Image 1 (cartoon, helix red, strand yellow):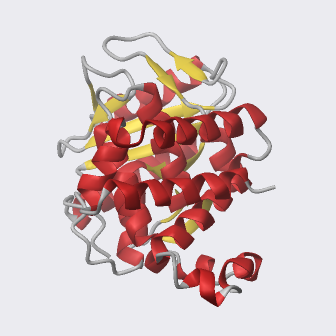
Image 2 (cartoon, helix red, strand yellow):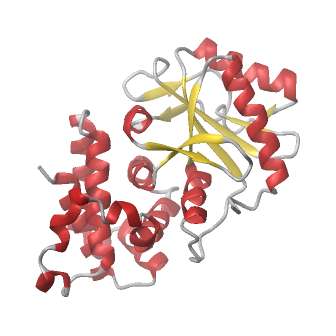
Length: 283
């Protein structure tokens, strides 16, 4: 499974070190970011032209800043990882692979984590706990590791939040969502035909009027709702984010970048987002 531009031997080495470090310090974790997306694209044998990554991103459940600092120190002292001046949550491996280690859990206050350091020292971890509880799947990777990986619906959720937090620098999140929704049906085939979504396939006349991407978007929305249903504030935030972009329509940078990524008219993208919202709002 070709997960990224990182050579598989390099990726295995990084995974070996991180898995051991997490185990030694009793830290639970899951894979997120572009590498998690690549896992699902590879498993679905997707041939779309998705951008590859040279970064490795993990979300880790951790109780305190001191425990997080212990983990960083362990990786730096024992395995020669290097910190950076730009981001306190990033370490660089000896083979120059960027590793983002994003803490959540007891360390967070009001959905944020703030640590001592230089560069970026504060991150929003809205949704991380909900995904840990209900939005990951265990996957055996080509490196032989079995890791919990954020699902595609979880990735959409995180990218909606990250774009909303910093739209001026997160345009790629809109593009990634456009790409994921464009291929969600084929990548999540088992989910598409799960009996709990059978109601979407009953009306043959209605099916002839909508695209498979619209059906997939509604199912993605339903799945996001299931992940965050225990957090009413987050559920409402996602609903408001989607409503905002639907109202702004072609004026929305988010919508325009989705349209460019998918190579489809803005009206088609708005139909996808409307179905995504229908799914998230489904009672």
